[in-house]
Amino acid sequence: MRIKLMLLLLSLIVSCKNKTEVKLENVSENRLVKHVDEKMPDLEIYDFNGLEKFLNNTDNKVYVVNFWATWCAPCVKELPYFEKLREEYSKDELEVLLVSLDFPHLYDTKLKPFIREHQLKSKVVALDDVDMNTWIPKVDTTWSGSIPATIIYKKGNRKFYEQSFDFDTLKGEVEQFLN
Image (cartoon, rainbow, N blue to C red):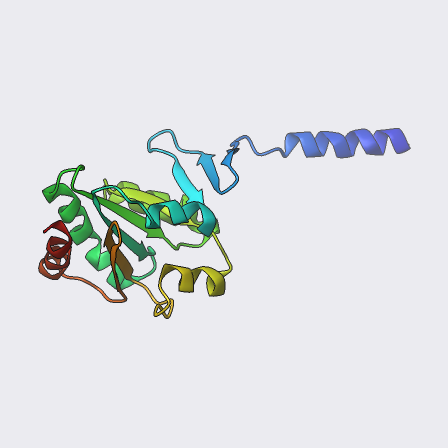
């Protein structure tokens, strides 16, 4: 009887196995890439230590790093301005990085469909680091943690904005770094 019960339990477990596999690949200590969607590039997911490399580049490019989320209406409203900015400048001059603060359990159901639907061409990464009290002041000591928030920098020149942008204002701020 015991063997029959164990076989029944084993067959239930095997038959209930989810056929959709998510392959997690530990690419580095600070980055985890999920391979789940053939139609779009893999979403890179970082903890703050992995994200820091995007906040401290020292080449001759201007970097525009925007912290946003799909559930933040002002963030969504200004995303087209960051996309337009990326289109107007060459990759040699400017790079736009969109750092999603969406909740990890929503990456597949909200974030990835949002990226596809809005056809975002800028690099999008997800920040999955729950210790906000540690990493927010590392981004900028004046940051309250509200979004949207943006950093524009080139080498040692850096400016932090805890605000929404319209296109002309955003372009004007970037122009200061290009000259």
